[in-house]
Length: 573
Image 1 (cartoon, rainbow, N blue to C red):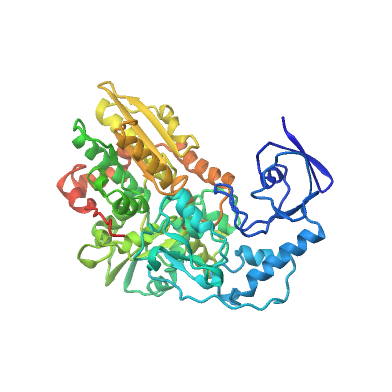
Image 2 (cartoon, rainbow, N blue to C red; image 1 turned 45 degrees about the vertical axis):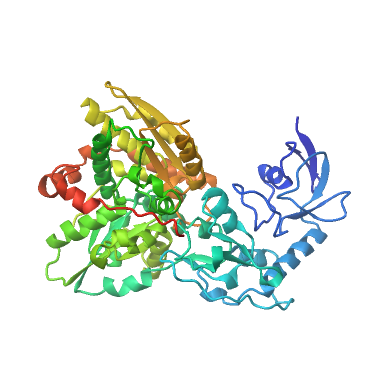
C-alpha cells in the first residue's frame, strides 16, 4: 500500500522506500537537480533538489531522502528557493565568464538554473579553477575550469561503462575530476564512448570539434569530398532542428549534404551490409571449433578499445573485421573515388556519426595503414546540426525528391545496426540463409527488439541451432563475459555495443536524451526495417554488385585484405 505525501498542499501517493524526488517526478512535479540522473546512484552532492520537510530542522535532498512514512513537503518555499539560489551562486563564483564562447552556450544546465532562479549579478567572489584544457584525445575535450564537481561523469564512467577513467582527485578547494595518475585522456584507459560528455551539465566535457577544419576542403575545387552518414544520425538529427524525436531524415540528408558542398554521399549502412556478409562467412569458418567464447562482434570501436585494454585474452575470439564506417571509408577511397576524380587532385573522406569513439578509431594505428587514415574527418550528429545552422539551409524547403548526381549508394539491413540487438538480428538472418538455403521469418527474431540491456535468441536451422546474444552497456557486457567464462552461459555469437541502447544513444547524439526519446529513435530504426522491401544484406543489389565487380566472394582474399585488421592488447593502460 502506498504512503501519503502532502506536497505544497496537494496529496500524492508514494511507494515505501522510493526517494522523494522519484515520487514527485511520477506525479509531474518538477524539482531542479544537477548531480542526479535516474539511471545512476543518488549522492545528494549538489543540494539543488533540497526540499523542506515538516518536523525536520534542515532541508533534505529529495534525490536521496527515502519515503518511510507520511510527510508534509514544500518544494518551492522561500527558504528552499534561497538555498537553491545560494548553491547556484556558489557554483558560479569560481566558474569562467565565457558563456558566449562556450561549446555548451544555451544548452548548459548551470546557465539554465541561473536563468530559472533569476541570478543577474555575481554576489559571491571566488577563485577560478586552475588546470589546463586536455585536448589530447581525438574525441573528448576536458576543461577542468568549467567543472562543477557534480560527479555525473564519474558515476556513468564507473557504473554504466565499467571503465572508471574519471574520478575525484585532491581535497578541499583543490578537488577536481581527473584520470588515474593524472594521465592525459589519450594516455588513459578512456574508450572515447562519450557517455561522460552526454551527462556533463556544463562545458567541462565536450567533443573534439572537427568541422571547422573540414570547411576549407568543401570549397576547394581540387578536392573530391566524399561523405557517409550512419542510420543513427538520420533518426536523431531532427531533434536539433526542431523535429520530433524519431523523425527519419534519411531522404533529406543526402540532398542537404550535397548542398553543404559534399561531392558524393554514401550510407554507412552499406558498410554494415558488407560487414554482415563478411561476418557470416567468418562464422561459418569457425563453426564447429571448440572454443570457450563465442564469435564476438567488433563493429563498436569503444567496445574494441575496452576489450583491448581489459580483456586482451578475448581478442582471438573477436571478429577481425573493421567497423562498418571503416569498411565504407575503404570502399569510398579504394573503389568509388577512382570513378569520380574527374580532374580532382585529392580525396577527402568524411564520416557523420553518432559515435565519438569513431573519432579515436579514425586516428588509431589499426585503422591507418601506412599512416594514411581511411577517414579524414569524423563529425557527430551535433556537428552536422551546427554546419546546417551555419549554412542557413532550411530543411522544410529542401525537397527530398531532388537528386544531384553522383547517385547515393545504399545500405539496407545494415540500418538495423544503429539499434542495440540490430547487428545480431541481421547476422542471424544471413547465417540462417547460409545454413538452410531459405529466408528467415523476421518475426521470429523479436527477442532482439525487447528493451533490455541483454537479449538472447535460439534459432533452429534444421541441422542444429544457433544461440545468439546481444548486450549493450559495458558494465552489463562485463557481467555477461564473466558468466560465459564461468560456463554458466553458452553462446555461438555475441553482439556487444558499448553505449546503452546502442548507437542511437552514442556520445555524439543530442544531449541528455530521455528514455522516451531513445525509444522513439529505436522505433524509427525498426520501422525502417519493417517497411523495407529488402531486409537482408545478401539481397542488397549494391552489395551484390560490389562483390561481383570488385570483391569476389565474401570471406575471399580481396575482402580479407581490405576489411580485416589485427587488434592488440593494451593492458599497460
